[in-house]
Image 1 (cartoon, rainbow, N blue to C red):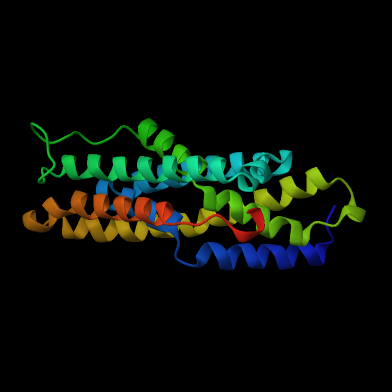
Image 2: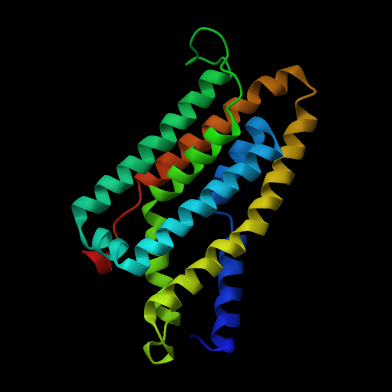
Length: 214
């Protein structure tokens, strides 16, 4: 297994990475703005579960295969982007905006929020790339099973994201709850949430396949 020094350094790097603003933080924020801190926490749990899937895929070499194939990467990228944009459009519909159907949509059940969040993370090629780029730098074949080291380090990345996501969920949820007392602002909460999701979809769509994989 990795040395204590290696684990400490890697954990610090993972914490700093998770603290920096990124798609996961924005996704949790979007859910918290829309349905409050509880939805943000459920979204964080879904993202965590999806990240564990990437850890397992990287350990098994599946992510490496995807990143080595231009076609596979493109399919994954556009699937993830389309799903985020679709979720954003649905959020606009629930706000009763220009894209609204007949009547506002009800709040999503927490089980659905969890499933959607997990799928968002699974379809995120940048998460797969991150694990492929970072984990090998800290794995020492002489320190034991490479697979076990990959699982351990990947789990550290996923677990250290939880406190940051919890902070984002409560902070953005609390702000949204205060603002919702204003009827005009309240109507815009779902629109802001939808705009964030659509923006994330655009961000994923513009991502390029890493040079190393080409």
